[in-house]
Length: 208
Image (tube, rainbow, N blue to C red; front, side, top):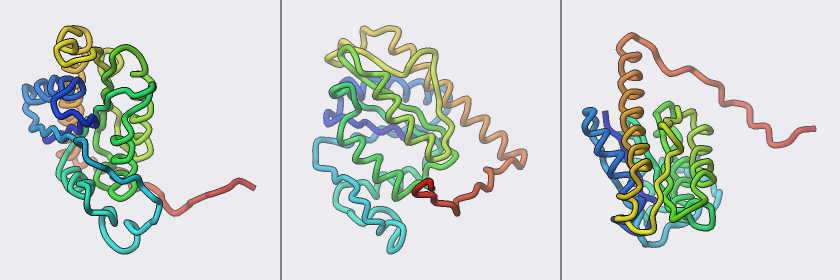
């Protein structure tokens, strides 16, 4: 089982990374393979709703900022943890731009795979940020993985995050819960339990 962890901060080894690394450590102790990918500080395009990903090619039509590479990694992963710093009580703009395009152009890479959101803040805005990220999972038919408290850490610097003992405990429990759910899914597949055949034909755009 492999879990892809995406760091939505421009800082490769900042507070968000510190939280994700704690999750990854617990996952690896449970036998999972992990990879942490940082979105970095470079430009990430917004989704422009062109629809080309549904007609002319797999993935996003824009191939210059690493989003298609992330979709390819997602297809090989069994579970996901998306981390974000909190900016004005909201996820980072770059993680939202990335997820808009990853989920719109590559929804099938995520469907029926467990997902979890993690937020890092100096003080407040974490629950709102986690709520925003969780909505990507619930529209992509993904089981949402929880922990023993909300998935958040606090601190203005990585060394302060390391002092948030409860936050780190939540990260470790999140990793264990993710590994447990992945094993449950594997056991179900071994017993012949397949993902549901859901309906996708109706696209109601208005209510009369």
